[in-house]
Length: 349
Image (cartoon, rainbow, N blue to C red):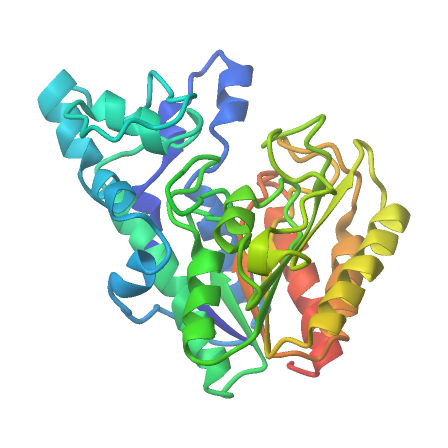
């Protein structure tokens, strides 16, 4: 199994927002630089395969998915905030809840309110660089898989991406790594299925492909009636127009254990088989584990190996893209368990 990883992601680190005596605040900013380093170091020690820096596919794959105005904001928001308000950290203060204005807004606060949907995604001086290379990590993995050089490729992306829509960012996500990789594969003539197994619904990925039939989106996640992102991810969201029937959500209740999870996974895999994809993209979140600070599911480490094993039985060229997982003391072992189960099913070890 080949892994792509960009080490300078650590320059974007919401840990600098942590407050020593405020556990609730710190729980909100859990997408920290240590996540990527922990997984990388464990992969290197486990010797699952080579680890490489990503190649640079440029801005075009990003521009093919995300709105120009949002890209420009992400590139410039930090400098704009410093000039306008003298602040070194960018966070929105207002949100546009009604139909968007067509007027150009000069204030960075107004622009943030148009394109950001929560306050969990701060922008620092190096955030754009980290998000850009997170995308390149995903596309590099997709390109290696497409070249038939590897049946299984892992993109150790950070920051994650599945909450970022074409013209919205939030949920620790700035650019949608999985959607950009999928769209790039479609442009190369591939039929792509995305299986999102993060604890939280991949609302951004769903929105990007909601009207399309060339990408199947299937998600197993926390019921949005109880949990983030709340406004997306319901079971009756099937797509629209040409995309009708190509979006399938499987929301699960708080406290879900492995038996119910695997039964739901079987339904999701049936949908993927029926689509007959050329390539499978997995948005991997291990925040489904018991004790993750952002989740309520009760999976344990052996469950991830079994989930990986069952997905691997699809026997498809597979790109795994890292999303969530915030229990730092056990994060790496869950990722490795999943990848090992996937590898063994595909005889990729």
